[in-house]
Length: 179
Image 1 (cartoon, rainbow, N blue to C red):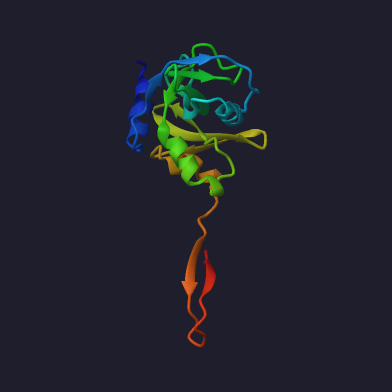
Image 2: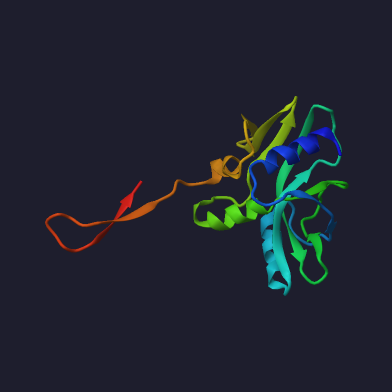
């Protein structure tokens, strides 16, 4: 396995509760380009199909010092025990990396997320960066760790906490919003 892929797997695993790893995925197409979450979600209407989270790694290093890992969603068929992807135009030879922690985080934080697809990760000159394309430019941020929270940080609204308050002069309980 190539150095950048091993380094990504090792660095990401440090932040994950579930084991991550490379899986075989059959590309069947039929979905919309660049809409992996909706494509995989739409397959949930089929019996025995579940949604899967992870990463797409570029099939080969264009240079030894650089490789991109793009967060991606696809499906798993419980009957055939096989992974499949309906998102078209995935680069031939792309490497699929299963990362269940992304799906768990998205489910736990669904109400706070503006996107179910996290920032991409770029391995570049021995370091990791999170990457997002917005406003016709790439935004790169150094990533000392590859925690799920860091990967979703720009898509995560702050937590809203509810607390019960009992005013000293009243016996009624009121719900207050604490930021």
